[in-house]
Length: 476
Ligand SMILES: *[C@@H]1O[C@H](CO)[C@@H](O)[C@H](O)[C@H]1NC(C)=O
Ligand SMILES: *[C@@H]1O[C@H](CO)[C@@H](O)[C@H](O)[C@H]1NC(C)=O
Ligand SMILES: *[C@@H]1O[C@H](CO)[C@@H](O)[C@H](O)[C@H]1NC(C)=O
Ligand SMILES: *[C@@H]1O[C@H](CO)[C@@H](O)[C@H](O)[C@H]1NC(C)=O
Image (cartoon, rainbow, N blue to C red; front, side, top):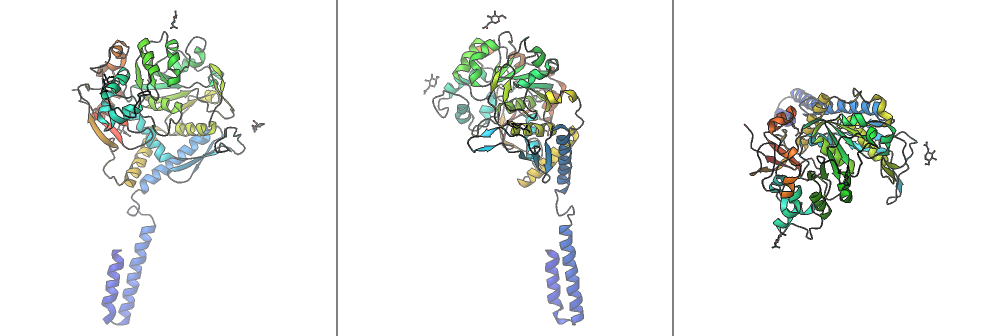
């Protein structure tokens, strides 16, 4: 703009001079203007300060596209721009799942924002996904509103009576996080698909540092060669509570994580079993769960470097959902799920194991490398922060909306709440909660120091921003 202003001033000044000089000045002004306009369109660094980021993301899109081509069993990725991508099933794919509400069959195309997806899922690697007392204390509406939403049968929409709500939650509420980012190197998340019976992944599953299972999944000699015998975590919904005493018989250490709301049935169960029980934190309260498998992946990512999934029906060509231990049930959205899991694999979030992939399971060379993913993540974060007008918030605390400090409970990355109920004191919680800092995996210790002893929690399950960040006293 400046070039244009000064040239019009020059034109005005030239009025009293001979016309040749005037003409010369006009030509000069015009040249300045043309050069100025040109430089703003040729895309120099100065004009689009985020060109570097967009280039990194475009290259990342290409590697995701190659990954989908080589691992997607027919799925293809179509790049729209540096963030947007569409996954397409091959033409003629049988879309047998019918949405009665909208009177349509499942579409064969799924659009994604890879920038958002990479930000969301990388965030889980630093997150606490278990409800704690320090979270409820730090969150502004923590006890009054949030706690109330996590208790079925409260008989009120809010915790007007704080001690009543404590009574409901005491059984499942540790003071500080019982589990830590990077605690395990590898985790197996085992779904319940009938596909598991087509392969013998049992030994491979047991080879992981932690195994996460789902609801009523039986673990016994009968299924050992398909699903293994190792039992560490189990996510449960309310409907499964009544059967847990039988299912957990002989597995005292297995940690139960309640997926949505605690309930009288759970409290009854807790009195009968020695197992530690916690409540998942990070659920989407308004829109309902995005699928129970996703919760297991979120939990796994908040503790494990590598997440291998088994028993999620992700191979093409199936028409009904089966379970490895019972008769088939009616499924839902198979294509949508399959496309999303494939995207997650190509974003380095999970590794898929299934019958159709069992032959080449050890080859991950076509998945973008950690360095590539980290670079893409940094670029996506910088673009997003720019859009939000935040220039300085690039660090890991850039999304912290609410800060809290751990009270008397906080003593490093070990919790062990002082006022827990007798039932909790007698449970096997202490395997995790009274864990000395030194016995944590080296990577977990390093992460703790890099984060300055801060635990990150989500306010709302799927939102990127608005974290609750709780600072613990650092251990010397
Ligand atoms: C698609 O599904 C229908 C009905 O389930 C079946 O008759 C047909 O053979 C299937 N086509 C393909 C290509 O699998
Ligand atoms: C609050 O709940 C506690 C525990 O159930 C109960 O003893 C107390 O009477 C309640 N207080 C009020 C004001 O309702
Ligand atoms: C638990 O298993 C043992 C044998 O392993 C059996 O004797 C006992 O009855 C079982 N308890 C329940 C509650 O199923
Ligand atoms: C996650 O934690 C690491 C430290 O282990 C930190 O360098 C990184 O910035 C964090 N990332 C996010 C997305 O919070």
